[in-house]
Length: 252
Image (cartoon, rainbow, N blue to C red; front, side, top):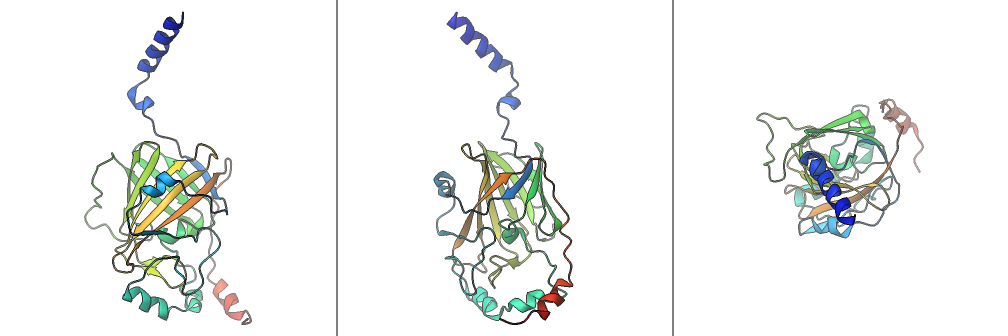
């Protein structure tokens, strides 16, 4: 009897198309910040290159001026950081400029993932930004089309490595890394790994980035999000007149 059941189970497995057997996890849905740092997965952290520091600024909290979480700045980055004035960011012509994905990814806002075999779409509530990830196979070259412009979301390709979604992004327009004077150049490259944590059900990720113009070493963030079924992405609707209100606030 046992042999018959085993044979039937084997036939059932063989009857499933190979694509279904190897189907990657489904990350589709709405995900929101946990507002807790969580404990980084040792195996995922082990995948990041050497000369990398874990940058612990995920969520609402931000580093004070002059603190960069262990990132080592080049002379150019130090000069820009020294000239940075937070009040400049609150000018009417700047207050509604979106940051790049390097900073926006770790912010305290929800996002939606729409997943297909060939394209994965991230819809971020933060500044109403949308990101396209063109899927391929592990080992495929990451090559942007000729003439691809730099943008705040960059150009992203992805593949599955077992149960982990791996995304490589370049062509990212220069923007902030830590929102306190440390910027990245348009030569920054970012590699992310996403997976569903089997114990908590959370979506977890490493966000590794390197920038030879601005950084002497590399950085990685550990980020966690909770599933938010039935929720939606709402318009961000940045109002630049907020800058006027900011300027009217009394100095502390």
